[in-house]
Amino acid sequence: MNKKNLFRTMAVAIVATFALSSCNDSNKMDDKPEKVAAQTAAPGSLRIAYIEVDSIMSQYEFCKEYSKILEKRSNNIQNELAGQEKNLAAAAQNFQNKLQNNGFTSEQEAKNQQAALQRQNENLEATRVKLSQSFQEETDKFNKALHDSLQHYLDLYNKDKKFSMILAKSGDNILYADKALDVTAEVVAGLNKAYKSKPSEKTEAKTEEKKK
Picture 1 (spheres, rainbow, N blue to C red):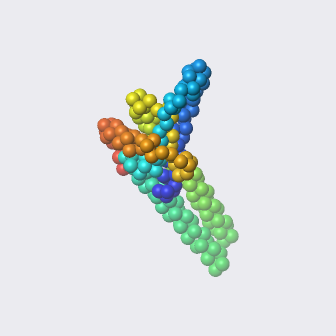
Picture 2: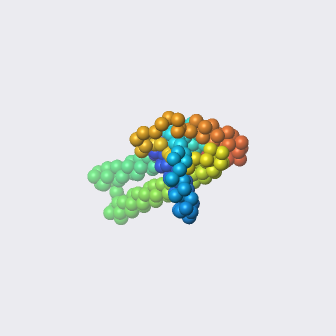
Picture 3: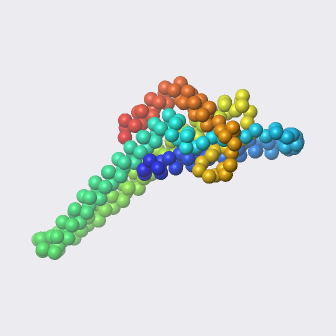
């Protein structure tokens, strides 16, 4: 998986986080229909802000560190699989050459080598599945940590700001928004400040990177 795809994964996680926040806010409001009516009746009572997802991915230290970890892990997986594929291709070519040049002493020897090639191919496929699942688990772990981090910070951030809704702006999903509603810089700064104050999380991230 290249960096572009990793960033896309992060973007999905971030958008999902804000979507969940919006759904949670909507559910709270649905429980109090009278309050909703009062809010919709009052002009200017709805306060909305938005955050640029690309800025979160490129400026939030947590995202930057884990994107490096995942990218390194992805490259290691690709290299490992490429090495096994190369070995299998060489073994298959060797088998083909011996078969064409009558290099086997018996038919049984040829069958044994062919069976060995089949096992080697099966092992390669099993390794591919195992590594793919492992990488997906790591990606899911990152997405959950990212979601929890954003959710926790936005809960604190909005205690004072009291926005009715904070949207995630990614690409053209929001066709127009007044720049005055952009709170990206504040949120990124707050996220990084909170992240720096949690050395245990940074140590864990660095430990994960060393393992790969």
